Image (cartoon, rainbow, N blue to C red; front, side, top):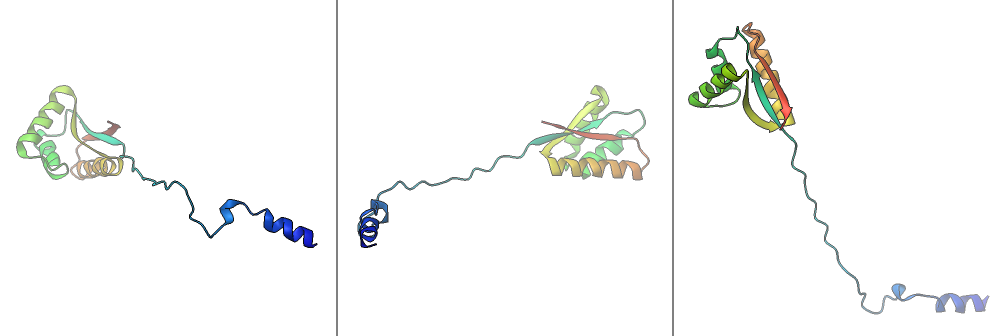
Length: 117
């Protein structure tokens, strides 16, 4: 048994030695946050929704100036679709829902969708 004790105390490796300085590499971990995916919110043209209503939607929900709102509305009218803005998923989804709700309240068939930018 005394032989085992001697062997155990002699088997200590250098890492267990608390008497001397320990040498090693300190690594710093940097956490990088990933940018969220962005989504374009689009208004679709129809033949029934008044242009002024579309301009009002663009001013109220998308915070466009009068000139910007008119430009987007004309683009929707002429091209069939217009970009209202580019947002993170949650914001885009909320804006699409707001447009749908207000259009429904005013009995307009205005359609608003989103697509990955």
